[in-house]
Length: 217
Image 1 (cartoon, rainbow, N blue to C red):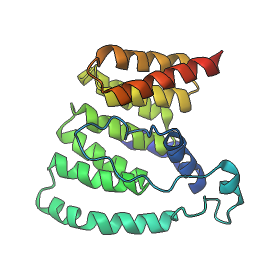
Image 2: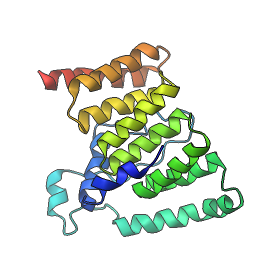
Image 3: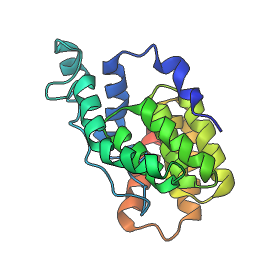
Image 4: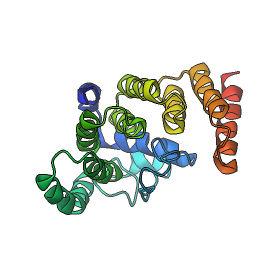
């Protein structure tokens, strides 16, 4: 497994495009990598949402008003990750600690760094479908939908019922590949294999299925 798949297209993206992609799912309340994280780690505080494509284009920096700059978010990441990185020097093969570092970078939109630490964790614990789903989300936010889908498919080899992987697979096929049928198939499989899903999440997935089916007609 490698995290290099995120690099080719990501390097050509403007910062505002990265923010747009990261915000698009938050706008509908279903963030890639957050909605079905389960008990692996707490849901992070979401960044300020983009208000609209118009307001994004109209701001001097090409970002929405109130959105921290990439430099500010990088500083935030470095400050928050510092104590974790100190622990990591003593325990470089701690898979859970590597994930904590990756989560910090993910929350602050440092997607390349997040992918690196998720990847290092997966080298130690390659069958962790939840972490692989998180890796897929940062690869996607980095601009590589195909690489993200490959990671999700790998996660599902280890855990065919993994709710996070199935949900994110649907979202990325829908948003990243414009594959409505593939998105619906992933979400229907999610509902079929997870009958224990709580009412709110089940209703949200059913709503997404109905929306995509309506849009594709």
